[in-house]
Image (tube, rainbow, N blue to C red):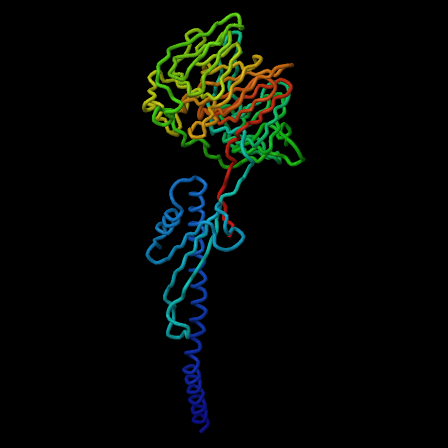
Length: 495
């Protein structure tokens, strides 16, 4: 009797549980469905947001580099994730809403997608879930406008051979940017150094990579081994590090200008063509003029007038010389001094000119060959290298004046010296601002894999983009370009 009663109670309980489970199952499945859809929806939305962010950054890179179209850049990111057929993409420049609306330096990407909901039969709001994400990216300045831009990440061990009476020999290069002498250099603008050689950052920590001469070479160096010089600039953006952070300071204020261990910055003249008659027919004259040497005494005689054209060399020893405006292509060297352009003395007026220097005697002004094939490919690294300069200009002579090409319609506007990209020879500018001296040196110098030396004291109104640079200072040297180079710009995700 007792067992029968127990069995009856158990049977009734089991039946009630089954009924309760049957009644609760739809609600339970709905809860599971809501939770599962929420989690999978969150992941899907997060994944789509990552794609949107990447698309916005790709579009912003187009704005920075001015290459391609922003829509194509964004679509290429979707293609990389196999989403072009399932995700709608809208790219807007400038953004339509938010703090960056109407700012052409920023771009907005909106992605829209839908997917079937899991457990949709238990959901009351339909069988699909829609996702919409938005990203905003743009181009922002990392530095002020630039006065010096050192381009070579790993410069050659370059030693400069001297020219008797004009230039002493210089030992192997120990810095992508090297400051020598006794005194200080002050730069009006920022300095960018792509050289990756090791050194200190603003906190004194070790950064960068060892160069060809470990412990001696640094991306930026002030009088190696014995710091007798100081360097001042608005900002110093360096891929590697400096020899001692104490050697560097701001032009004004207390903030340390050094920003070390950074990414290299692209060549500002990466797309600049070599000079040809088709590129700039106004300023290029294809007349062959041979080698010219000027020794004119006394200086009271009328000036010797030189005209744009193709020269093997130009050597000014003394006298008055006037360069007519235009482009001078110099494609060989003077046999006595070994350089292509030498201005040792004499009163020179070279306003509105550009000197194009090449080591190719076969350079052809109609098509720019062989220089036009250099492009931006890094030439073979020569290791240790001892060479004569390609250019030596003594700009210290009273009443001398040098200014870059003055033609806003020309791609070479503002350029004073442009050296073939694969030509590593040094360009040397000497200037000594003494009492009553009013000489002018103004314009841009570009030598992608070459070496530029500014020597003396006083003011250089020039911007430089070169593989490496030496500054030889006596007391005080100021570099204050009349036309600066573009600031370092970075792409940033802001929304």
